[in-house]
Image 1 (cartoon, rainbow, N blue to C red):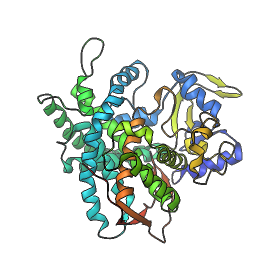
Image 2: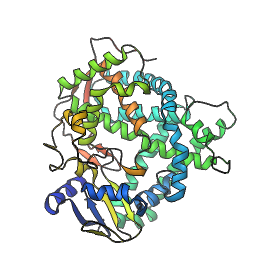
Image 3: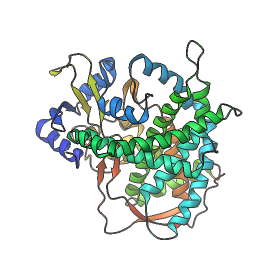
Image 4: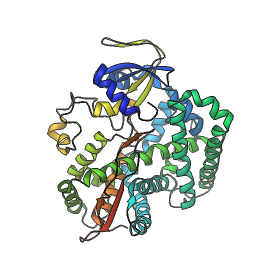
Length: 436
């Protein structure tokens, strides 16, 4: 289970059906489900009865503070309302130029990397997406070395949180061995860097980034967020906002490497819609086929492979009783790969997401950004980011999957490529897009 929970849970689905009970780490009893009726009840219909579990509230909160990811109830509703304005259409249009500038800078480094030979695209795309999210938050003044330090901290801490969760019997050892302290010290260094940026901005002219949205937000009493709360929210937006997109893009390149027909069709659509113009959020609805490709990649390799909740009170969904205190695991990967909901679920088939076929899909069987009131607040930002990066990379480069690799998914907090995905890139013979 600790090595590969997806493999185990999928096998149990085959044996025990859509809903079954297990013990996480041999200790905590949990219900695992891919039943859309149960999922809808837990994430939407009776969402008030299901709080985020200890994995996020306690373990992630310990490292990331109390923010949107790690709170619930009225505190969460208030923060959600304040932060939501940072992801509306007007703000995403304003962020587009910051994102495009960040991408142009990142591609210069990417270009130098690929000239040396095959590269693992996962860490390369992580650098690109993290820099883009960091600059969307803090503007262009954020230094490259600070971006690298914060990125490394987030990735290392996430891996540690997964170990704490899947192997809870090791937590006493983590405390006495110094492992816990080492990760806390990493977090403290990253916090200090970001807090300095926040404090500097208090005395600078207003910007057009997400940090400005957080600083301008006001509660009903007219007060704004403290620097420390802005830090927590910023760190959590960094965590949630970069790895989702880099994972989606990594798997997209892997899937497209064996589908030249889809690849060329996506390229033609980008050329047709954009020409030489940089992308803005208002362009997103125009990419019908590219969106289908992204949606199918997110089905096959959902970044958040599971969503966890804790029952506040006894509950029942049909014949399924859920006692108070039970953990409920919405097994997103299992729902996305269930033969009863998807024909030939292991095949890469973009036709599943045509407008006609979407109407036929069973609700709550496709959950790449969660569902219900706690669905991902940055879903629209993620789609803009994925399309923007995909557009520039596909039109600038040809690419091939390096032979002799074992491509395998590794379920951490995010569903990562376990051994990476090595590819060879070369410049296309067609004209490259204009990156302003």
